[in-house]
Image 1 (cartoon, chains in turn brown, blue):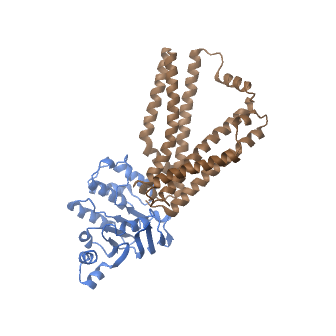
Image 2: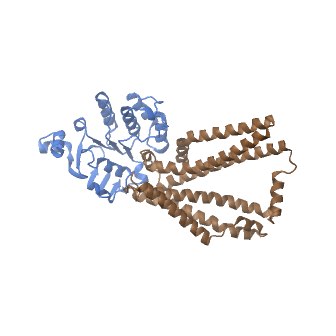
Image 3: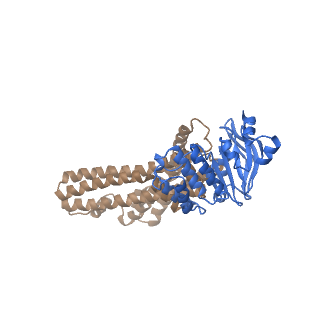
Amino acid sequence: MLKLMKYEYKKNRGILLGLILLVAGLELYFLISNGLGKLEHMGMAAGFLVIATMVCFFMVFILGITNYQKELNSKTSYLIFMTPNSSLKIIVSKLLYILVLGCAVFLILGSLAILDIKLFYIMADEKFGIIEIVKELARSFGVNLSHVWIAVLLEVISFVLSFFSVVAIAYLAVTLAATFLQNSRWKGFIGIVLFVLLMVLVNWIDNRFIHNNMFVAAASDDVINIIRFMVPQLLYNAVIVVASVFGCSFLLDKAVSL
Amino acid sequence: MLTCENLVKKYMTVTAVENISLEIEPGRIYALLGPNGSGKTTFMKMVAGLIKPTSGRILMEGSPVGVESKKKIAYMPTESYFYPYMNCKDVGLYYQDFFEDFSMERFYELMEKMNLSHQDKVSKMSSGMMAKLKLAVTLARDAKLIMLDEPLNGIDIIAREQIINSIILCAGQDKAIVMSSHLVDELEKIIDYAIFIKNGEVERMGDAEALREESGKSIVDIYKEIYA
């Protein structure tokens, strides 16, 4: 599994290096502005860093899907499918790679954000720290902050799972296009339509049957209530991920044609 | 070693392989002969597990083709299939990571014979260099079944002999080599068994010597008789 992930990284290291250089350049701009005491430039750099963060997460998502799509439609697929690895292992390694990459981006950019916010507050000579501001805001909304962290933690897990459910559904659509629809001239288009239809179905079920509201959960005094509000969403997304992964593996085992 | 029973592969209305049944035994060099589009590559890809047959079954040492059979089968596709970032050494390291029977030492030896350098970038290779690299990395595996799809494609006359010698050196009592090629006269000298495929079906097959004796013709002439 680790070896498969290693080669996923090696294939993308050029793009990743480009993103690292972009973020490093912007961070340098922020730090220089901070050193020179130019608040206006710090604000600009912070704004660019926020955009760069969004670009990085978007790239992780796009890389994850396009890598797989390209793999199934190019001769390089021989390299991976010739190896004695099951289809399931190949799919899971690709998803785990996206997870690791996403976590690395989150940790790096999150650490930079904390550092930059601290520097910003030191410079702006703020009396309140971030925590105090968040606490004050929460209090004004009637939210119990001691419990909100549980809700936030569950919401982060829910976000990761929901992100993966979208990636897994995209994988399923790509796999369907490359296996059972391999002979169709419109397989690419049908793949996109399938992805949209699956997403609409998943969202419809989510809105109709799953109740998830972080703020309702956070307002609750009871931890059990918080979990009751959040867990169905987590389970729902986990089921989508698992079902899609096994679906991809089944399709590859039954009808792959490289 | 390898048993194929009633193998069929259809793509919409096109039948690439039609009811192929054959046995591959160890200790022999097989030639899979036929013009473009006759079904040779599709057959090899099905054995390598890259294409699933529409019907029929393939058994490698009694077990259906899958993860375990991929440990025993080395397949060299006709196309370039390496990642563009790779150089020759990266290709070897990749095989070393995934195939227990791969020998880096043997790979370097074959590379040296074929005048390839460790740092040669895959993306900048000529078709001849690419063919040599594919062959070197495939033959560096100690696989029981070695399948080479058009191993002489893009190789100049001088290097062909060198490549054929490398293939012969790889042959052994415990392994089988299956080669497809248009260059029948080049294979004639080294093959033990010939399989002629026409329109996805086995037109004729048998021991090369027996085929020659039976028809009083060379393999090249039998080829011409079938396909001309």
